[in-house]
Image (tube, rainbow, N blue to C red; front, side, top):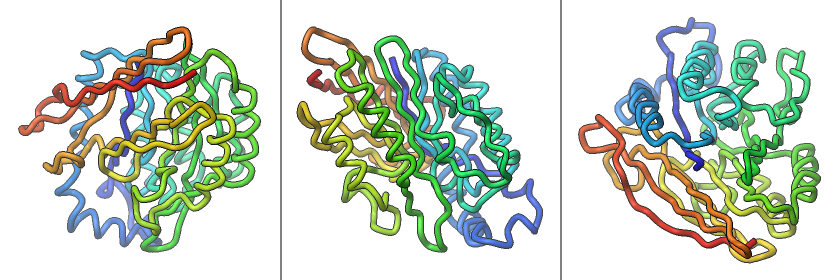
Length: 306
């Protein structure tokens, strides 16, 4: 069983100095004080961890935006939260645009999470102060009959933009990885922060090289794509070589919003293999009205051709 959650948005504005805000973070910090702190609260992550202890998934995947302003204190706090969720071999993380709100020195940022981002064959830790995440991603983790493929769409963007891109280097490595996995008896789950399908978010928040990723998926296929970023529940499809591929997005797991599609939730995927297909039972876990616990939500079944 795989659990998918996204957009933790751990915030530590009060633990940072003025110098940390002489950039794009100033606008983001003001927006947090005026609006978003009323819509989100990372204290809900304790409630999430308690529910994960009850549901006991075999693996947990997190599709980005663990931090809110990519502050060093937020990266450290996110590492502490990851440790409460599980050991690195049971939790897989891909970064989001808020995790690269601005460039932050590697040792004050992603170095904290490297054990949770590396694949089964880890690459050497980058030594530059501002390394390219393309040196780490894409990653592959195989857990029994499930192959978890992590990609990074995180990169700094201009004011008022929240776009993402995978980049040519990472796309080339991803094609090699998908080619090697093609035809193997594995349930392949692709993780990305930005939605790889059109219409889920506005252009200023989009994945700018989505057509290139879609072309790879159409050629080699995966069984499931999971994303975040949109802060709402989304169920879409992309064409694959054996039929439509489900593309599932979860809202922020720290959201206090009351609307049905934006309320905090995560999803459990029970994956069963048969001779010619995969049966996927989806169970959403939704924050209750009193924000005290996650409760059972909608359940669905997906049949994916092998």
